[in-house]
Length: 248
Image (cartoon, rainbow, N blue to C red; front, side):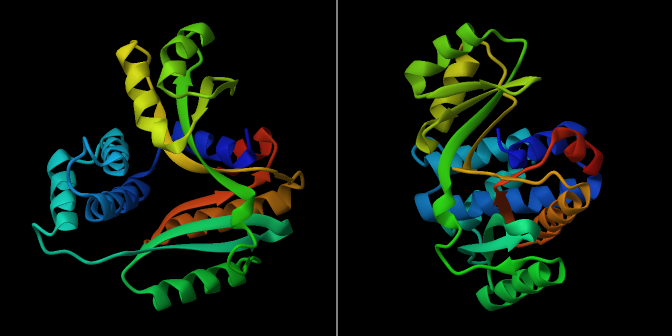
């Protein structure tokens, strides 16, 4: 597993503070709204909306808040129109960054992301110079207490392609469009799913073993994720787990 994935897992295990939780709610609601606008408000026929709905519920976003977001997306309620953009960039040490945003002002958000990267030792990259290093993949995390055989028996027919031991958890990968189908198959078999998402995985990683440089990379990741318009940040860093744990 890439260092970025380890970092996300450690942060998840430590839990979110109230401020971060509120910011997460706002981002999830925006993602639900956009999914409804692009594919309709029926979570059964709109796979992206179903994924966003489940992600929001897993984060304890109230159902009525999610429903209002869906109605804004379908036009039943007034709302802001958001544009989806992916910026490409580099963190210190040449670490690649993919930055997904939803914004109602492309020029403002682009300038703010560029400024943030520059101030923290990173830089924007030309379109296409970073994206080729990543592949959209479905990733599900399952408790390590469940047997590998039980997991694969439930998940293979649903589209799971691989399983890896991540210490305290199993990590399953599948085509992105199969993420919810695999989740449903696991839950139907009585397997607890800790998380399920469509994410971007790097084809290669950059090892960052210097503690000071690792902190610079993680600081830029945190700063980007704090931005209201930034929905997801993907990277290809590989930082030793002891440095990651000390830095979160």
